[in-house]
Image 1: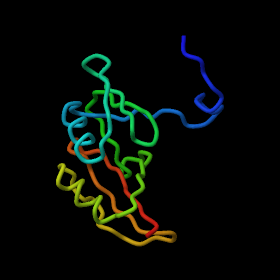
Image 2: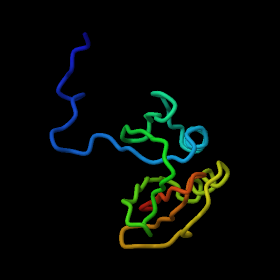
Image 3: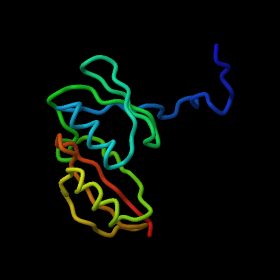
Image 4: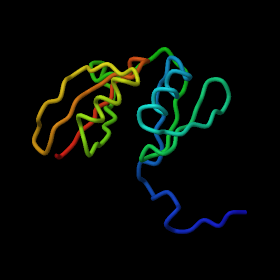
Length: 125
């Protein structure tokens, strides 16, 4: 049995895990592995958990997508180099939904993964 230390336990009443939709799990895994280095573990044909993303989570098979136009929450990633991250995402198959723009505190852009889910990337530099 693995001993749980205080620092490795989930924090009480904090966000601990995200579950996101995917129309095609193979495309989703290939995209995030290639673009961002995320790691995946499959749990049956309709679910794949991800790690190495800042927070653990998973993708579940569905025809739904994340979109701020539909009122979805927006998953925002951070980048030390916004232009480099944008180029990497595009090369991996992302489409840009909102080009880089400034906002109080930094700059960001919105993109869609190959399944159509909307995400954003921001930088303070």
